[in-house]
Image (tube, rainbow, N blue to C red; front, side, top):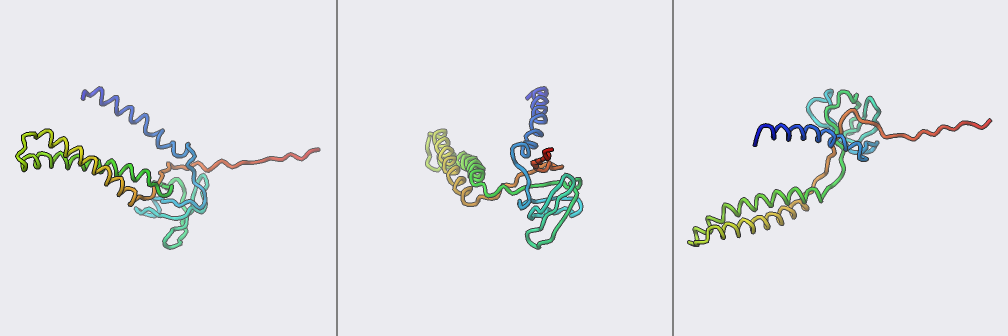
Length: 177
């Protein structure tokens, strides 16, 4: 790969990825009191605190830790990482496990194809490798998708800081003279 093409690809990645990360807040993902969040802040050390969001403002947020019920408040300037639990995402887990199973099954088939061909003393080395790799890929895809559905996990949406609070509707009523 020429160096100029690599530079163009790196520039494109740098230009595209930051707007995609910020899109979480622009596409309707907001934080509201009662949401389950994970927060990494300088005041709390190197651990993520998981809890229920109690309140947040443009300069700070407060949460109640799930396990102990301890309440924490922190200025947003010191928040290093903020994640919101979007809930169980089976479709995402099935897709990820299925793709991993596909690659592992295909690789296993590529390795086992020549071994099976040598064991059977078959002259069709390429055909045996092709059949076992495709069969392994299909089997891996099915097993991976099934295990993804079985072991689905929560999806944690990252947020950039500072967080923009949700827009509040303000109504001003002017008394009639």
